[in-house]
Image (cartoon, rainbow, N blue to C red; front, side, top):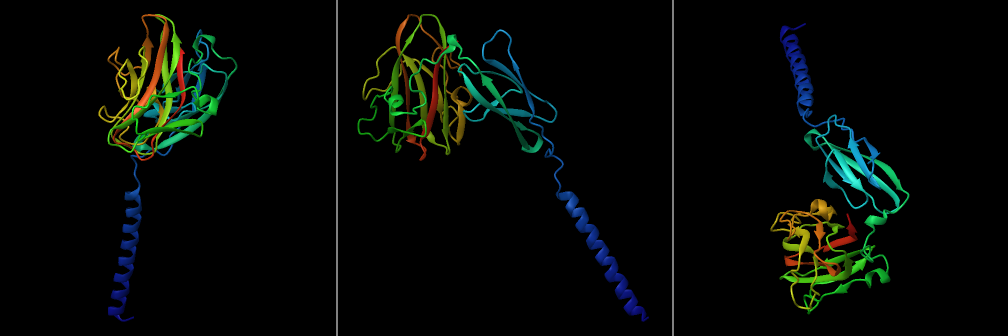
Length: 291
């Protein structure tokens, strides 16, 4: 064989082998060892002794950095040992989202059957799901924007506040009878598929009757506010978990209220803003319960 031909063939062979080796190395380099591949979202459910309809959700800890829990109102950040209360009778699907290294995620679900409603924690809100016309009629519009630029609509077992911006706002409320010195908790499921700017969604439990055209400020309990750092991006979950507005009484983010006399108070939700989300903010499953 001609030596020049033999030499050229040898060079081509070595070059092909080298390229194959480089290709193999490249595939190994592209693998990201920092992203977990075996995140386990399994968890156990344990009834809490002495606490009716209360359960401890315990996530297995291996490879899990943080947890989100969903009992039917949207996933909210929580603890890996999370205590939940389900005061009303029914069947609930609990979903755990486990987050591991590199933001890897996995989910797991289990059902809880609650046989009996807790009589001490019954919901005092009427029509809190907005499911029927009768439910919706339990709420009164306070007409904060007399022009109707901001308004509430009802659909899909929920209520949605819409605003064109420009600081237009609107509120809905209903009266509730409370007992002196008893502690109550307020909560609801809130969601929006897009964020806002200069926007608020606030919940009040005040003694004064809401008046048309007058901004309600009596005993703010909780809410969302872009100035305080929430509602800037899309959200979904319990307001108690994703809200960032401080309670007027406690000075902290808290959904607990207490009153110094028995009688009628007004549960009011008002929302609006300067650059309001185009999709509106949706609320359902509104609760006002004794602790």
